[in-house]
Structures are given as C-alpha cells and as structure tokens.
Image 1 (tube, rainbow, N blue to C red):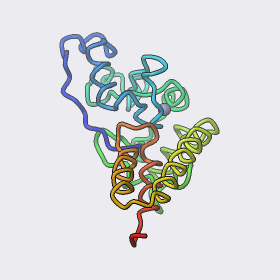
Image 2 (image 1 turned 60 degrees about the vertical axis):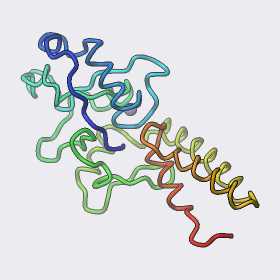
Image 3 (image 1 turned 30 degrees about the vertical axis):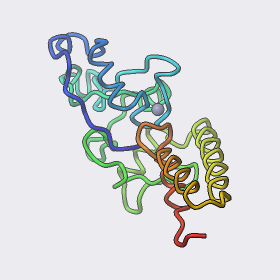
Length: 196
Ligand SMILES: [Zn+2]
C-alpha cells in the first residue's frame, strides 16, 4: 500500500445519487494509477475495478457515508470481497488517501508486515487478507524480475551506462508501478554503498 492523493471530486452533482458515476470513478482510478488502493494490483488492465467504501455503507455501519467523497476509494474485487463490511472504528484500517501507509505497513520480501506495535497495520493485513497466496506469488514474480534487472545493471562495467540503467530501474519503485511498495523496498535494500 502506498500513499495516495485524493483528487477533487469531478462531478459532485452525480455523487449525490450515484457513488460510482464514471466521472468520479475515473478520477479515483487515475489517482491510484489504476491500481487497487489496498493491494497495489493493477486493476484497470483487467476490468474497471470497484468503488470502495472505506467505512462500509451497510445499514448498521455508516449508511450516511454512501455518497461521501472522502469515504470512497478504488480497489480490486478480491480486496473488496475480503473486507466486506468490516471496519473497526477503534482500530481503523489504514487509509492510503488520508495517511502514509508506511507508518503501519512494511514490505518484507513478498509479504507485507505490520510495523512493530501497529495494531492498525496488523488489522489491515488480516482484514483485507493482504498476504493471500495469489498476491505473494505475483509479488515474488515481480521481485524476481527486478532482481534480474538489478543484477544485469551491476554487471555493467561502464559506470555511466550502469548509472543510467540504475536510474531507470529506480522508477520501478514509483507509485504508478504495480506492487511498488515491494519493488521500492528491494531497490532500497540493494543500493550500493561503494562504487565497484
Ligand atoms: Zn486489492
């Protein structure tokens, strides 16, 4: 999970009666680069994704927030299904639109772990099932590809060429890339301390 910036609601009139109006859903999709706000899977390449109610709109939860822009996000069907109507106001799920997830969650290999002492991080991982087998597998493939590319970089003898390749690879940790939290952690862990 990476920090996201909530866009301005492009069509507030439509939002009053339709929380998933294409204008507004499109803005949420672009704000997360087409990725799920929770698991960072690239959603928009496969289907149009779901509009997520961060605080569930269920009758016994937060029905008054069904059309509240600050309560909406963009997520994948798998995370949406895992979360269902779960939300603990005492230990709320990490909300990447309003806070920096790295305060609660860290990438450790192909798993996401909560920061020591962060009950909210632990609750978020458990509730949304952020270490489900499918995600572990996809992250591992992504990290293996990145590791191979890093190896190729460091084998490049010419220092200028190597620096150019590394700069390009650093972009693999940018927020618009799938599973960027994990890619960025691998890149950081491999940063050279001395030139060789
Ligand atoms: Zn997801």
